[in-house]
Length: 436
Image (cartoon, rainbow, N blue to C red; front, side, top):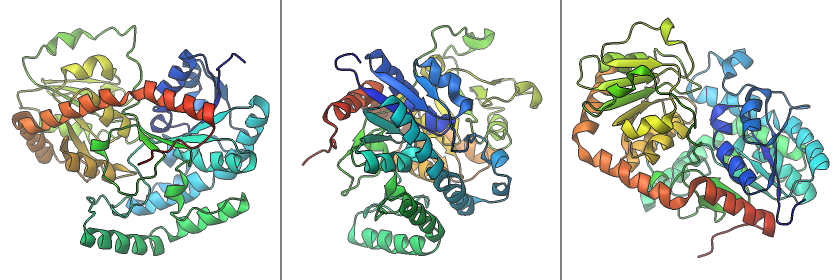
């Protein structure tokens, strides 16, 4: 082991949104001559190994494709809204913890890491290793902050924050109702699993359990998150954790159409909710006669399987964001956390349409922060999308707010700052808390 080198064990679910924020951090640590081994699913093995990290497979835990939950868990298909959210928390995330613990224990024995770096789906397993061995761990957030706060309504309701006396009364009342009803079964499963693994249950329940007491890296900036007087002191904002720009990208023949003559609208279907009927096709219809150039990205589906796009649109299965976003005026998205931050880091305002997973919270934050316009629905309405895009293109406040966000992102350091904090944790092995 080289002097000053730290061994990191990364742990993540095999899903684009869970792995994506960790990839640039792993790459940065490896470039600083640290060692990284990575426990995750076979689906993302090539991405992990492309960073230079050593891949560690699932053995005891089920290797779940996190981007295809409906195929992996057919009973999930007919569940909607909070019912689906409860199912996911109980049957996918909490149920997986014992197997994850067994695998991680084996890999800790084999590789002797100094620090575990986990995304929230693996944080509970990391906490078990911490209790058993004293091994410090950091959590890297992958979406809006979920932990409970006196200044916010319970996560998932998509309500604006309020720290006034009446607002805090609202928050406490809603939290009590949610914990007794909607999340009661989740909490029972969490506490039963914690007891089985020898953990003390966290007072805040399963959401707070994902917060490492050592370090929590949140890949955004304060202006996109609700202010919290009780934010845990180990939470550090590091700005978006974005992948490096591709070195060998060859632009398609239509690239010269993005010459600035017309505003460019990017509509991206994301990598999980990829039904083009929900966002891509309604947006193409909404903008059919608008004086804009539309670039549609399917998220993987073959564009040839879709209806022919209107004359002012180009549709591709994939276009790298790094070279494209500097030419974009508005991005339309279903609220994926990484995609939104890629746009905002480039000063591009948003139109967000989403209602599943954490999407209501993403929509609420977009509206609250002023960086775009959000709609809490699963299927976009062409009239709403068209109106929102017209408003963003004519009201400079959205562009100004997005540009301010981009400047704020640059100040927070991204992958370099995340790596510095992880290096500090590896050196001190003590909680990195912000003191007043």
